[in-house]
Amino acid sequence: MRQIQHYAYCPHRWGLIHIGCDWSENAFVNRATLLHARADSKTSSMLRGKYTEHAVQVYHDGLELYGVLDCLQLTPDENGCYLEKYGKRFRLTVVEYKPKLPKRSEASLADRLQLLAQKLCTDFVFRTDCEACMYYADVRRRVPVVFCEEDMRTLERIIGDIRRCTSEAFIPPVQKSQYCSGCSMKDICLPKAGKTYA
Image 1 (cartoon, rainbow, N blue to C red):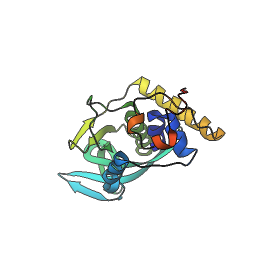
Image 2 (image 1 turned 30 degrees about the vertical axis):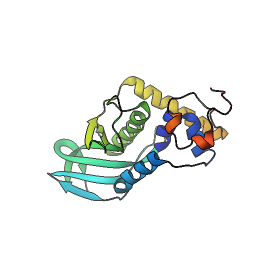
Image 3 (image 1 turned 45 degrees about the vertical axis):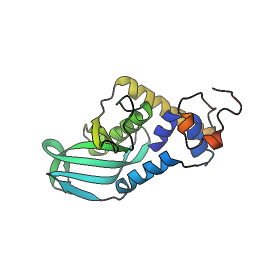
Image 4 (image 1 turned 60 degrees about the vertical axis):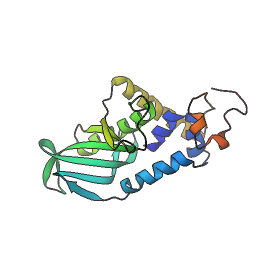
């Protein structure tokens, strides 16, 4: 599901990474990698009656999506879904880790769509209607995210675009974007070299 975040952030960057097999890191990428070290550890823990599972694999057959959650929080709830591992019912919350709180204090579209895909996969696997939130490491705070119909339409469009580009081995052209200056791929992409934008 990281592909969805990559494509929504910048289709050309997505193409360089997933079609062209290019990769480059900068301070922002390294910071995110360090943040996700614990999330990728596949550990379980319990604090104040709530269970936390890291690196949970989820999927959605209908959308043909597969991914790994940073964190799935399980809160005991008699009306929640039954998990055989614990022999109890829980209300589920998908938590996506991000290094820094956005300036406008709301998740970017790319991050929202990534989290929506995770929620849909979690709902499919566990047959529930889970909650979703972002955890911002710099402020050590979780921020709930509520999705709208437009988010779902955008996600479906991006999934279709990804499938088409993948089947045709097509890298989308450069788009004029305010994200270029902080992008780890800018020295490979050279967005201003041709000054021809989609």
